[in-house]
Image 1 (spheres, rainbow, N blue to C red):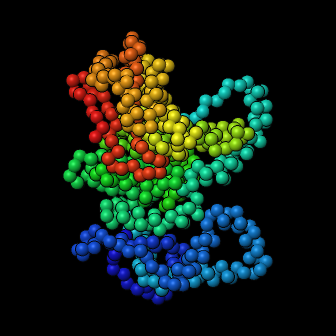
Image 2 (cartoon, helix red, strand yellow):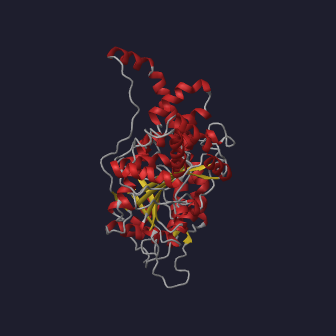
Image 3 (cartoon, rainbow, N blue to C red):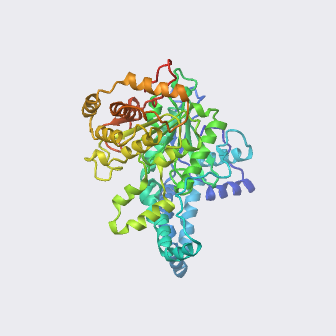
Length: 524
C-alpha cells in the first residue's frame, strides 16, 4: 500500500464512523512504499508497529479467536461468561484494542485509504469476480446395481457414509492440508509477511483477491516480467503449492529466478484465501486463477505453463484437463493417486473406511486427470522423497511419481508400453542416481535420433491425438528403446528430499516432438 496524505479525523459523525471502523476494521500488517518514490530505499516498506496497549490486547484476542479453539469451545465459553457475568471483560479487551488503533495515525491512515478505495471503484481495487457458474470434476464410476439392491446397500452403508463425512471434515482434511490449520498459519505469519513484502517490494508484485464461483476469495500474487529482456518473461508460470505451502515462501521462487512472469495463489483456507481445501474448492480456485490470467492479465493459454509441487499436482492436472490449450505442465514431487498414500499412514483395519473417505471426499486422482491432456508434460521425481513413497525414502521404486509416469505413458503409447516396455522402464526407475540411470540407458543401446525419427514419421503420417498406435509392428528391441527414450523425456530425476526447494536450473521446458524436418525441442 502506497503512502498518501492524511488529515486528522474531524469530530462528530466522522469521528464516530472512524471509531466504528477501528472496531470492525481489518489488521494492518505492513506499509509498502509507492514505486514512484525518489528515495534510494523507495521500494522498502516497514511493518506496522501497534502501540503497546493495542499490541498486547491484539495478541490475547488473536489466540482466543483461533477458529479451531473457538469453534469447539464456544458453547462452554459462552456459558461460563454468562454465569460469571464476565462478558464485560471480553468487551473491555476489545475496546482496548480499538483505542490503541484509534491513537495510531498509521492505522487511521490505512482505514482512510480503505474507505476511499471502496467509494471510488477503480481497476486498483483488488477483488476480482471472474469465475463461471461452476466447474466439473471427474467422478468415480458408480457400480451398477438393481433398484432394490441400491436401496438396501444405501441403508447398510449409511454408518460408513456418516463416519467418512466426519473424518473428512475434521482431522482428515487437516491431516491432508496442514497449511489450513490456524495454529500453523499463526506460527508462520512472520515468515509469510516477510515473503509477501519481498515479492511486492523487490519484484513489484501485484496482490489480488479473486472470487471463485463458490464464493471463496483466493489470494494471489502476480509478478510481471513481460517488459524485461529475455523470452522467458513472455511466458506466465502459474504455481500450485504443496499441502503446507504458501505463495509467499513456496515454489514461486523457482520460476522467478528463471526470469518468468509468475502468478502464485494460495489454496482455499491458506493465508489470505478463504474456504476449505476440498477437491471441488481446489478446482474452483484453479479455474478463477486461469480466468484472471487470461481476461485481466492478458495472457493467452498458449503462453501459460502450470507448475505444481506435491499435492498442488491436483489443481494443476485439473487445469491441464480443463484447459487443454495451455503451453505445458510441470509436476514436481507429485503422485498419481492419493489413496495408496492414505492407506500407508492409516491402520490396515481401516482400509474400507479409508477407501470410501478418499474416493467420496478427497479423490485427488492426478493421473486420471493428467491423461486427458494432450500437451507437453514434465515430471520431476525426488529420488530421496520421504513423503510420496509407500515404503520409505530408501525405496525409490515405491515413489508414486513412478506410477504417474507409467500411467501417462501407458495411455499415450499403449503399443510401446507392453509388459516388456514396462519392465525396462521400471529397471530405469530403479536407478537412484544419474550414473545408474545412464548405465541402464546405455545398456539397451538407445539411439535417440532413431527414436525421434520413428515418432516424427508416425506424427507426420497421421497427426492424431493420443493414444498413439506407434510400435505395434515393431521389434521387441525397438519397443524397448522407445520406452526408455520416452521415459527419460517425460521424467527428470532430482537427487534430494521432498521439501528441498527446486533450483531454477532444474526447471526445464517439457520435451515437445516437432514436425518432421523441424527437429525437436530439448528442455532448456
